[in-house]
Length: 210
Image (tube, rainbow, N blue to C red; front, side):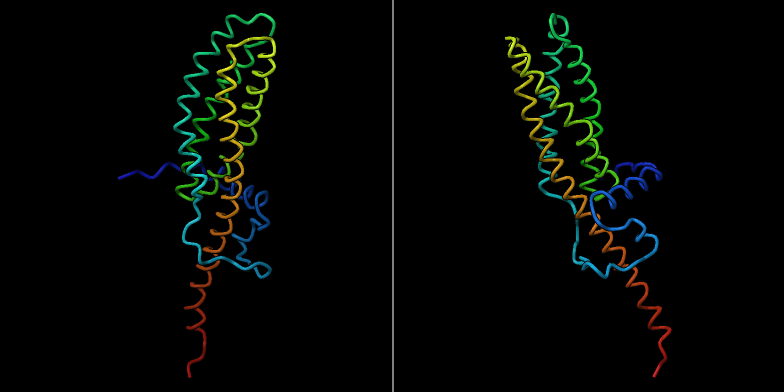
């Protein structure tokens, strides 16, 4: 039996929940506490699950491609760092190391957030993708093009793997944000539907009997 993945700390969960409801949707995060009804927008209580199949497919292929990317740059970048003369290749090595560390965390959060329908983990996955991974990948991609203009053919492999990775990251950012929006709507609908079910017995008990 598969064990349930450990959750993020409670304080981090609360902050990511508020961030998801305030940034990715128009739903007020305080509605979960106040129990307000969404009269202006119809709720979707018919949603059985809110995991994103396109996002999960992208994550699966990303996990499969990640070892190839890691092996390629691990082989190329040390050579560039030792043979660098006219350009600071050490920046590329630092960007590669930073991106590799974050990528392990990002892929885990993506899997845990999407499959287990955990909005905080999925929100953190989107933030890491947009704030860190996309800029780092674009830096490696653009810098390899600039250096190739100086006939440094060692960076051809860097360009080849980074162009694929940038495509993965852009698509995951788009589908990740969309999945967060769907998940916020689904969880808020379930929350208010449970409130409605709990209120029905109380109303039946309080109503006068004929």
